Length: 228
Ligand SMILES: *Cc1c(COP(=O)(O)O)cnc(C)c1O
View 1 (cartoon, rainbow, N blue to C red):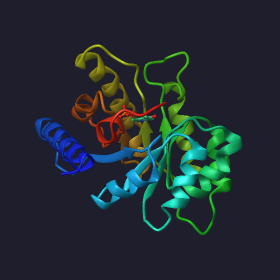
View 2 (cartoon, rainbow, N blue to C red):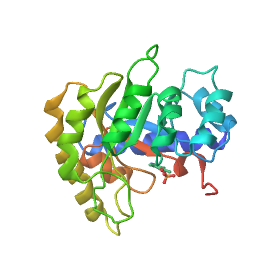
View 3 (cartoon, rainbow, N blue to C red):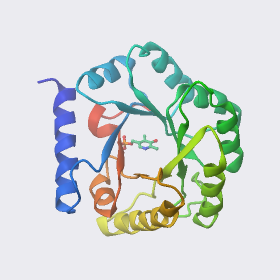
């Protein structure tokens, strides 16, 4: 059995176990395979094992792989820091953007989404632990930004994403994730399209799933450690 198949099976087992022990419905958590710093060939291999959604953080690197893999119907998610002068490339080549944290970015992505493509799926990134150097919006600005996103043609607001601070205990991890779940409950009534809560990575996916995550973003557990 290949290493990639083994890690993929192990990860799926962990995700299903976490869903089951939280008493949630199987199938309610999607896996986003974070393929930053991984070669296109690894993505191709994982796609062959049934993985459809891939997340990338570095735009230039991602564009090369998207072009190389254009024969596959991969769902591409942009999850990295996004400068507004690069927004056109993201609006053109990705299916989802999870790192939207300003009105300016929303407006540009909406204007720049090609009209022959379906609306761009948007997650608003929340700075859930109010960290000074972390990107993401302040929870108090969420409602206004969500309403802005819902007004724009070319975009489809799907929910929230966060990268909490690194915590020492599961209890602390749960605390941040529960805050995010609460914010999700607040914006959900705004639109039936709002269905995605992207939280949980290699080190905290069990806590995220227990708290209500619908999408975990996993790199290291799938592909092994990467060179940053
Ligand atoms: C790199 C990255 C991940 C995956 O992290 P792992 O610890 O390798 O699972 C998830 N989300 C974002 C936003 C990332 O940048």
